[in-house]
Image 1 (cartoon, protein in one colour):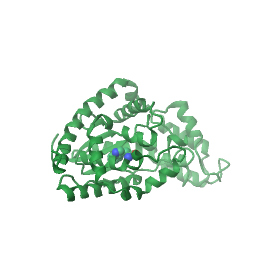
Image 2 (tube, helix red, strand yellow):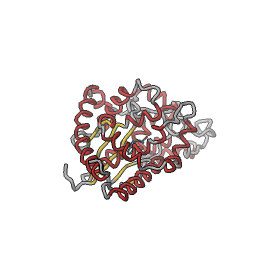
Image 3 (tube, rainbow, N blue to C red):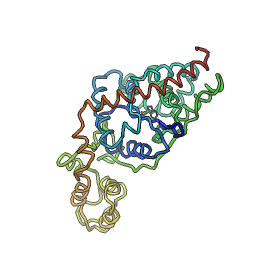
Image 4 (cartoon, rainbow, N blue to C red):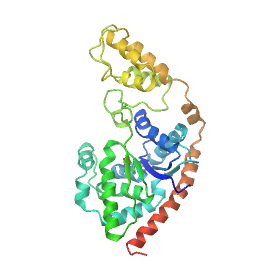
Length: 327
Ligand code: TRP
């Protein structure tokens, strides 16, 4: 690993098979960073993070980890280039999170917007726990352990990165310079709405998975929300706000032609959906690769990645312990 490369770290909760929103929002930007020679990337299955909101039902964590990593590999994450690992297997994450928790004022955690928002949204779950309040501290440990220069994150995670920067500064101020200041990478990712027009999410039951093909894919496309004012095929339509058009923009290089036909009432929604299906259902190298991977591959990749991640994590842990006077 050349040490003049910038370090990138990012993570995803183990959510099982990925949907198009996960792909365009996170995995695609990861692939671009991986394939840029200026970066050494660490990509993490954030299984401890999954516990912060899902501790009551943990039976799917392992299978979700496996399915997600197989999607990562089939989409092109490459264990020869990137360190692909599992957060809970590298115990330094928990260890550094504990040290950082000592210097993190409660007020910093309580004012994070996602905290109150999730408490409201997940009100059916009992998540007024220490782990849930403290999860941005764990995220800070994830980032600081690898001395990451850059963290690709979605807009919703920006406040966590700011907290991470504040914790790093406070640590360095109290004990001497140990941690690097990580910067966010906010990529321009295309918006991928779910079939009902809301954000694509498994829990909304509106997701198209990367592995969906043929009839399954067509059924999902045919359910997609279009312009409600376009009732007959030759009514003029409004592509803005239409889910099918949003996907044409991503998958069809001639989407502007579709847009004009729609506005002039020259194409109906059914034909437009069939056309989209023809772009999305091409036999992709993703699905071929995915089908050829055995589940064991995911675990073998993680095992090797965990060792590499741990070797890097131990170096920072050692400096942190020494700076704090524990060693
Ligand atoms: N918190 C992120 C999420 O829920 C996942 C995550 C965990 C992460 N640790 C990270 C992202 C470190 C970026 C950097 O989606």
